[in-house]
Length: 340
Ligand SMILES: [Zn+2]
Image 1 (cartoon, rainbow, N blue to C red):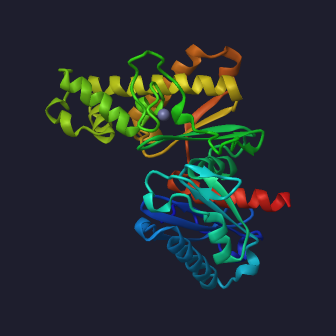
Image 2: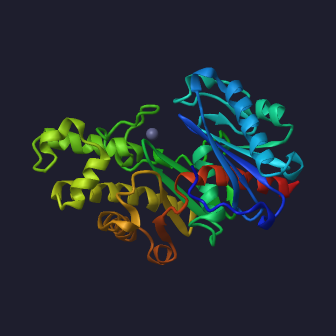
Image 3: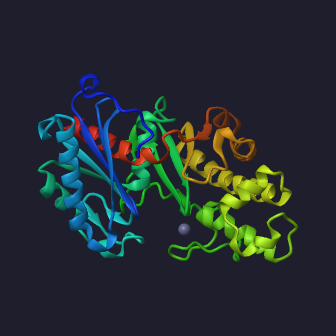
């Protein structure tokens, strides 16, 4: 479900846009007004093995039902936004090879959804859509440039520069998880493509767990030592909350790797705001461990960057959680509609 407040249709600003966020197990569908407020929401299972055509047919049915339940029809919705995992060809509207959707490869998903809906569809990478959501109505709402890093199973990213979402020549723009943060020949291997030293190989939830596991198996002293084989980033967070020095060290080192990546992003793009989203936030603002994690990133970034740029750069947690994707997809549809 959505954690956004639901705005009553009678108070909403027209026109409205659907934002569709396709995940590995579920698809979130929000009807969003011109001011970025959610007026309706539903979620349906992805059912990946049934393929993308079946999924897009069910998205269309769910959208029509949502409109009907709100006393609306398709005349209220000029455009729909769709975010899916990469890899994609954004200009051609193609899914290429999303790793968690093996039955969806090489599929013209935009043409399919447009055919089902009879409405034009704006297409985006899911992490880029989440970045656009934070930019439009979340932590980034007062900035013209912003970077989002999502810390989950992998490290995703999205970049907005001067109010424009960066898509790039190969629809690969914003893949900040593959920034090089360790150039040594024996640096950790990235799961995708086999490059070494990528940020994702150090700062994703699975990489944090793997780094801890290796040190525990090599004899590091910690309250987690007896559970080294099953250690997760969540267990590291919980042990850190209880003051386990080893877990705090792992979190500090994770912050340092992120700070190296953030320094490169800031020196390239000058985003003004760097937002950290995704499930691995070590409790975020509400936890002393999350606060320490954020402070360590800021400190480590300041040590590496130009002082006046660091002074003008804010680093903070994201505010929209799992809703950023559908909100951003709707926001991209709105932007494209207004360009016409
Ligand atoms: Zn990589």
